[in-house]
Length: 69
Image (cartoon, rainbow, N blue to C red; front, side):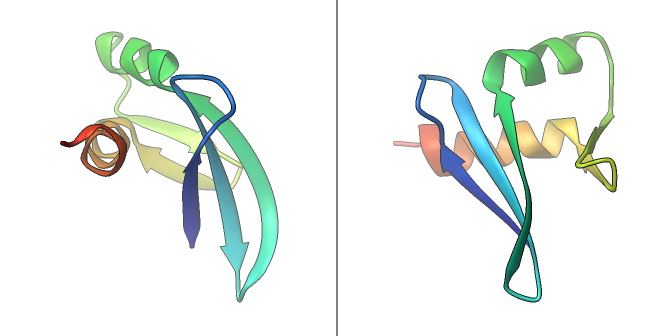
């Protein structure tokens, strides 16, 4: 299970991975990096060296959750 919360700086997000309610790892992602990956044609990025995340889907979810008004 992933929990995504806004980071300390504008355009950054903290992604926390939980397994059976126990926090496993934390990863910071910037919106600009995601847009750069999308521009470069990267479809999937590795997160936590264990999970693969679809870049376009992650951008869509961030837009829907944090930037939708």
